[in-house]
Image (cartoon, rainbow, N blue to C red; front, top):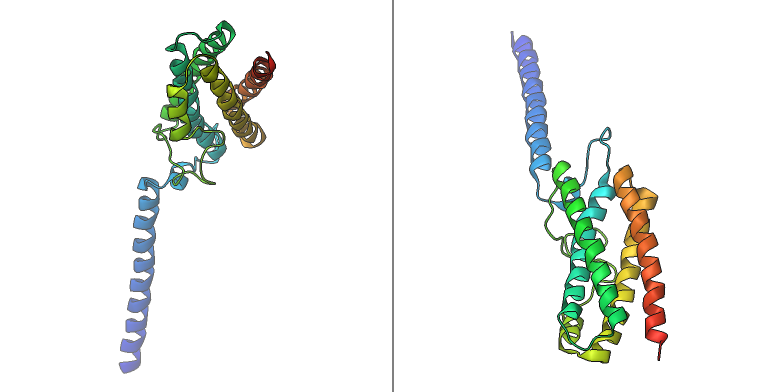
Length: 203
């Protein structure tokens, strides 16, 4: 009897152990899905038409574009700016504002957060080419030719950062639409960088 009781007790204990593992696994799995961690939110199913690179590209490029639009608005509000610089700022705003809407739509379709990611929440740190608050204030305070030169200098670095981000998407993305946008950003902003360098070099 004693040996039978011991055997039953062993089976019972094993059953509890297995139940405990199953119970422990289930909530943990559920918590991963509900986690606010950026990494858990960027893990689409393998059968999805997009991947984590597509998500990160969109989440990072939205605030990057938003700052370019803000910088363009700052210039467009100033007087005595060279017409070529004003025209460039107008084109940058016209191109990037719709792209923000496009990327926001993708993130909503993918059930991903659309809010601005911070340097702490983004894998690898901050976004390349972003202008600091201090430099943005300098742009706001500058006038006429000084403002134009500052805008061009800051926007060249900003564009170079966007191109690096877009190239990363081209190399590792999955969504055909997102990759197409990244390629378009590279082409357009490389051309604008050359234009801005010429404007800076002009007497």
